[in-house]
Image (cartoon, rainbow over all chains, first blue to last red; front, side, top):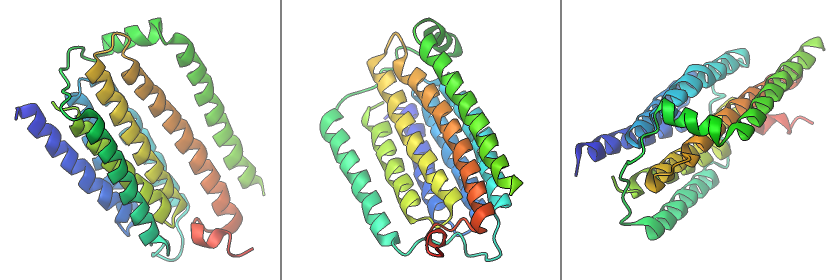
Length: 165
Length: 100
């Protein structure tokens, strides 16, 4: 087993452990902070899977802005009771469904792809991703910027419409 | 590196995210579960991109697109949760519909 694989397995263990803590912690802000650890570990996995640029985008967008947005939302919607982090009454159904989804997906990929190996021949540097993005994918990229603009304007409109009342 | 490592990790993260979406009572934390599931998908895309050694880098470019969609989704979702909180003074998904 090479050093890359050992480090990947370490990142994977950190990601799974912190994801479990994020989804089960009773403190709301702790959940968001554990999610930072999960997303950071996944970014580490991206680096090991030759996706350097995607890893940095993950750190910038997810860890940098999405989690900050979530913490803002948690603080703005704070309730009197501190037990709002509690789980619903159907948590066991949810746990069974989550387990079924994991085991089903896991069994599918194990039966389909066991023995395959990643060689890492094409590193996803900023240069190669930029080349691909602006040569082959430029139309989807432009459409996506429209989507993002529409979503942001929509978010502003929705939150302002509530403030007027 | 065996292709199975990232794929099994993605399967595990997806299941945990699904549990979070279904089991959490706080609407903001349900959105966190969705983010976790999207991250599992991203991991799959990156793993298959590296496996195919794709010239067009399809997997990694699609990962960037997914991250953008996820940012749009969390922005809109949190705006909806905020206006829900203004309307009914709670983000508890068990109580929102029950009062009516």
